[in-house]
View 1 (cartoon, helix red, strand yellow):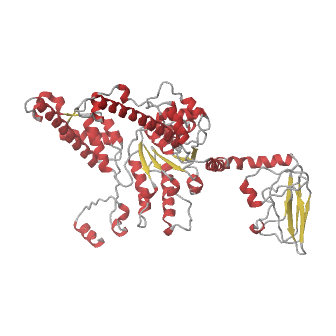
View 2 (spheres, helix red, strand yellow):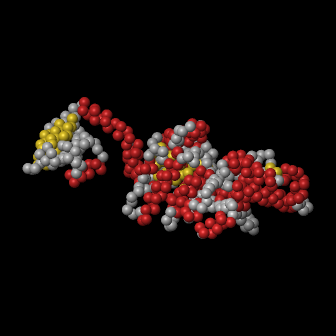
View 3 (cartoon, one colour):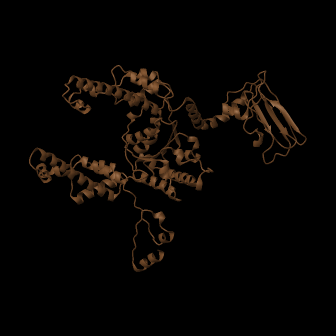
Length: 586
């Protein structure tokens, strides 16, 4: 291959080659080309200009309601060849529309051809309409879609999302500002484009991501974990690169990673055969860094992840500049929030005038997720439909019984065409339907599981606050009389003389702590009345807790010297740095 290219270069002045996968070209061949020109997909303004040129070259007329900007917005990520296909499909859609009119007119009168309609309708009959382009764009998108998915704008609005007002405000601050004030970020200010939704399943994480794309007219990429995996080495990482490249081509857009823990688990897992997941995580980290501050420009690309287990994610994903904004989506903890969700889900229902959704919400537990509310409303609607169907069947039987035996019985379709009234067609949901559905519904998440998710939330949201408050708590403890002094030397030089002194006044402790230092030393411990703290059960199971009959809590302090052991009882909870680094002592 290299020899053939060299021969062509020797006999020709210029050699031009094209490729869609430059990384797959051998280095020897790639090095023979002195210039590389990357041609990305056109942005919205460029697509509008390409469409105008295609329309002019083909001599096609457009109806007044057709706007190039609207068509350009709907054709995100499409290239020039795809836009030519869109215009040709629109012409075909126009031809099909005129043929349908011709057939309809021929039934009522003499034979009417498409030419007759064009002549009778004048120039307006020969124009491409907005509906023609809508049909063409939908067909082009279906042709463009593949395993990873094509960008689209979902039909989900804020009205479809009940509650979650605090999450909506946080999302608005993250996404709305870069879109409305891009000049701020063009001057060097890095945008925060990564959002992580976490919480129990069924709380509306995917629905909220779609609503974000609709609210701000953003294209929407939905990526599932298995779609990125490939059996060939290097192809999984290439799929990640393709997703983000398509996102750049279709910006402004949202890239949504559903079940992010299946795509980016913690690296170093022993069960990861071949390290494919580690490579995917590394590639994902590199792409996220490019979104926040790359020279190629990640502006207009927002990455949203959703997971039920944030503790399984690789910690590098959560640092600033990546998924740095973590938003917890939990269950509704007030009946007012539950009422908001039910109003959003039932806004297209026909409710009986006596229905009080607030009265229904007052009887619901605080363990219902968004999916449970959806199931509740769906079951209530199903009960109403079943009741209405039974009433219609009863009317049909009554009509058949009243007719003479010689008359054929009417069917359900015949009843709705000739005998049904407005009351027979309308399905009205009553309050009893909601209550019956509530009694039959089993919550998808138990109270114990919700407590676990709340503990995970506390671990992620309270970690930084705890680190900031720790020095203040230590100073406060010293002012309150708690003083722990350790002078046992460093870990690398702990064979000298050492002394440990522990004193406590009104201290609260749970568990046992040990200090160890080789060499000569002594331990002095004083104790005062103490009360056991209310630590978590898992910590009590790990370290143990001992309560004296007189209400004192005991902690053993041990120092090992050359001649033996010295033990003392101390009622103090050691601060950081006083316990031994030897894990075998715990």
